Image 1 (cartoon, helix red, strand yellow):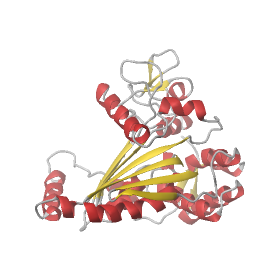
Image 2 (image 1 turned 135 degrees about the vertical axis):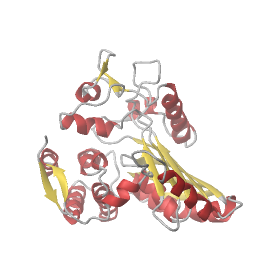
Image 3 (image 1 turned 30 degrees about the vertical axis):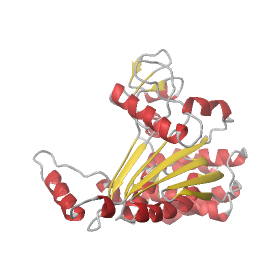
Image 4 (image 1 turned 180 degrees about the horizontal axis):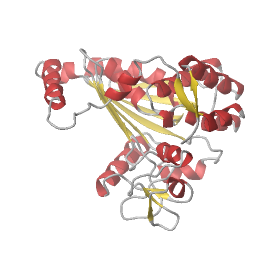
Length: 334
């Protein structure tokens, strides 16, 4: 079992902020990203919290990531916003994209934001949760460096290609799910390898193309597999088309060729969609959907947990969080 150290949420934020500032980010960018990492640790999303900080630092130090970027947006049509991240962190581009996205959806019922030239290595739930909290259904997806073999292959071609969805609930916390189209997110595989834990069979293949439960064999020379075989592979291809084909950015297999292999995230694109139930629905959608969730939660069995419930429960606590000591040593040595 890995050793851990308790850090307050404020200490997590300050640690990330200090390291990002020292690596060349300005206060605008560093504070946005540090807050995102704090929220990930707060919500129990450890593979997307401080675990990501060394990679962000590597991208800043190599000059790949623009730590002083300001995203710029263009209103192409009343329901389409194009956002240029200017080689900055994706969360800074979200601050430019999401307010304009929800404004457009409020007027037209459906709106799309296509982000390019940004570095995304975080969880996707913050984007769609922000869309849902504004009263809209939200969908987001992005691709990455190739690490997943399509169904029927043993060679990495797709990224882990996460897909997130959120549904607004004015009377409660939104429904939010964030999933990799890979059988397991790469960050979770890397955390399992660090903590000497096995992963389920079907997560990935080793360098010889053999199925394995050893996360180190997958992360070092092996490949991940899509969840559900051909079903997950098809969804992963859809994510590639929405985040590369539609935005004009590179597909995952193309991204590797232009990345400098500094260990940081690659530059790429992101697709965001907002839909207005107030405009689209023909009934009292709030009551109708609340009744649906009540029936779902009341089904017999071990208990149905609605997507996002655990994260929202975790964030109610302001207690210090357990942070892996090996990770802290790595961060402090940066």
